[in-house]
Length: 171
Image: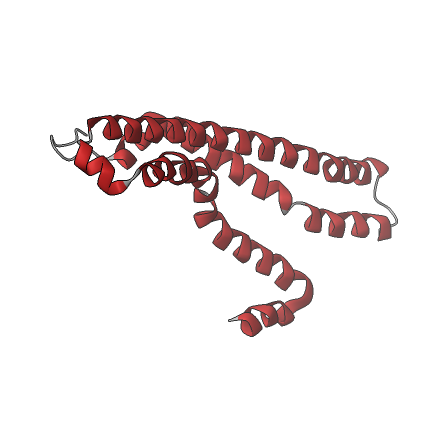
C-alpha cells in the first residue's frame, strides 16, 4: 500500500521493511514460551511413570530426555529472539537518529536557537534509543495474557479452584 504524498509514516515504513524480522521474533518468542511451560506436565508424567510398575523403561527415559532438552531449546529460542529484536531495534534507532539529524540540518537559525542544542541532542540520543527496546517489549503485549492463561490453566489442572485465588486477590 502506498503512503499518500505529504503523510509519511515511520511506523508503516518500519513494518513494510522489517516485517520478516518482526514475524520471526514473534515465532521465536512463542517457541520460547511454549518450552517454558513443558516442565510441569513432564514432571507429572515422570512421577506417574516412576509410580507405575509394568511400564517399559524407555518411556521414562524418553520423558527424562525431553525434560532435559526442553530448557536447552527454550534458551536457544530466547537468545535468537533477543538477537532478532535487538537487530530490528538498532536499525530503527539508526534510522530515526538519521531522520532527526537531517531535520536538524534543515532547521533555520532562529528555530535551532529556540530549541537549544541540549534538547536536540537529547532527542537524537535518548529518545531515539527508546526504539531500540520497543521491538523487544512489543511481543509482550500478546504474550503476557497468553502466559497468564496457560499458567492458570496448568495450576487449575493441579490444584483446582485454588489456582484462581491469586487472580482474585490481585485484582
